Length: 274
View 1 (cartoon, rainbow, N blue to C red):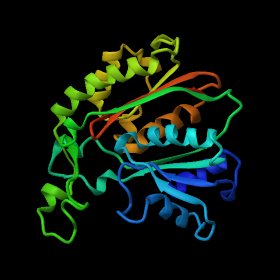
View 2: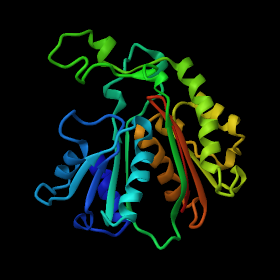
View 3: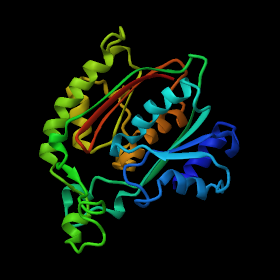
View 4: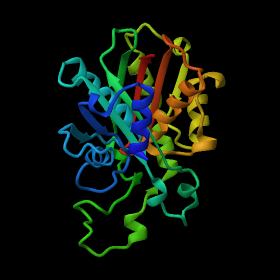
């Protein structure tokens, strides 16, 4: 899916594969532990001998925002010219189908975008991310790393599948979303009323309802694709962005506020002028 999304992004940007000089895998869960997902995407694109740099940036459901923020500095500094960011997740492969709290909220999906230096007509105005590891056990897959390695026998359903304490996540995430918003908008001269589109992580129907209510976001400005896509992990935010671009709702010069939370627990926000 990630490679297909990448090809679609290149087609829409009227670029060739060789116009890219770095590929970033911004997935919530990689295809395999080693090598990085970006390298596997490079291979799937037929670029095995291209030498194009590949690396992953992972902050679970916020991976796309983290990758976009990080690569903006590398492009601005001249390290890279044109980046391909790919967010592709298949949560259906790692959820516990006996746990109705989690199995009913997810959806598989992929999205990709090309990032290059602009003439300042399109730019990131401000961004911020914070992590409070007091919630590191609230959303997790415990096995698969060095703590519970594949070479060790373990209870697969308990340790090898995704688990979440929804109430604890919601309580912490609610507080963080408000604090993140205050930091992101600080010193920008902007308020929520200046934002044309709010593009949130599509966490769950209930989470998005409370997010919109908590920040007093008008329904018509709130991009909600949850009913048709579910929670696609890191692919959620870029897919929601694609939706308003594809449906010709988003106009050049409009302001977008990306926001969401991810396992960790992390909270992120970014104001972007399109």
